[in-house]
Image (cartoon, rainbow, N blue to C red; front, side, top):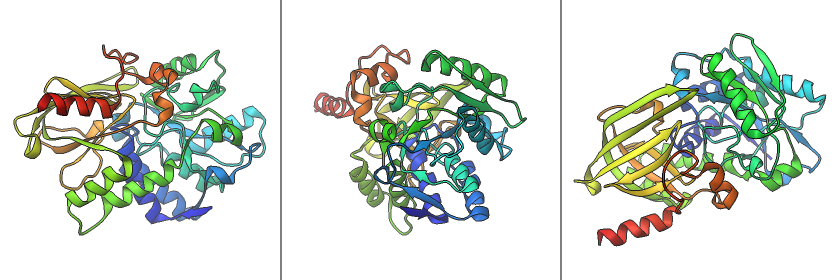
Length: 367
């Protein structure tokens, strides 16, 4: 067990936004909420998965919807605890052992910290994705047959409700409809789990990894090349492209941000082009017309100089970025994982190929 203080939260916000692959919400907004919560209530305890008991009971909280909406629809502040307590009451659970994030992302990594601080609960060093994905059934708990329902959902106006559903896809469909009516963003609590389920089905050490990534990116008096080498070593990642954004096509539809961006190569990628397609999160990257990374592997955009994460809602013409690819957690590379979050699920006519093989193929064809 250790405590998460202000500095840790600064690092986690940056690192989780990087792992969020463009989604998961603005890290600045999430960080402000978490810092305010610990300033008022004190540091949050972080437990490793090894420190919890099998019979302990946990409830996560998260935001769902289109991340770009947060620019104009800022949370009121009490929704996170309200939705958490609504689900606990519905389940008849007087004792909740802690909470954890459902995904890595600038906002969704911070919401559980707010809940933990306000309710004096520990945070568990795990999540359900190891990155961010746009739909509620896209979590590692679902791969093992754990139900998302019952799910509590609320908005900043005070509307709140519970869904009991027949499967996790229906949880997504019904909650998404409610989210759209609530203004394209809402707060949810779902996938209540035991300690045993977390040990089997969660992605472990993700909070710590986010903190380590954030510390590397935030380091002062170090050049981008040095930080990038350390970042790629830590994450087993690849630098896929260096470029300038020349065009962004984006729309908010059905509670998601959809779009694609075009990049023109600079420096090591001079005279080359890249296209990145996204649905909240970056899902597919094509370099010179050839796919070099695809979901469930991670496609992360960072500022060319600072390496700070670039979310899909902040994309703009002329911005210079690096495109970094990371291998997904092994749970996502299973048959069920690929069926749930692979390229064909999102409508791309490709069979999943690991980033390692795509990079080797691209290098071979270039030679």
